[in-house]
Image (cartoon, rainbow, N blue to C red):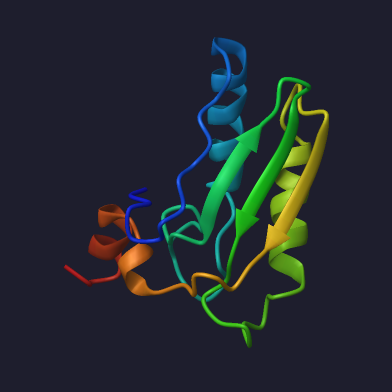
Length: 118
């Protein structure tokens, strides 16, 4: 995902072990789909940051397509649940933000192709 449009720089994994865990967390997040859009939330650009600490705690900064999104209460809980299921994750904190607001420009090229934006 290209974060240049958000101004948010994703945290770099601290070590090879945390890099592997970081990738596993991204894969878990990528298994979550917005029920109205046939693209996972990572490719949609709803995940602004995934940080894995040395103690294997995971912090996720995410948004939704709209504050009025019908899954506003359930989607962050689903993200937390999927990440908690990743081996070696100690704790998970998911923060929902509206700044910057989501826009289609945040989608990956694959998501744009899938949804006919390209």
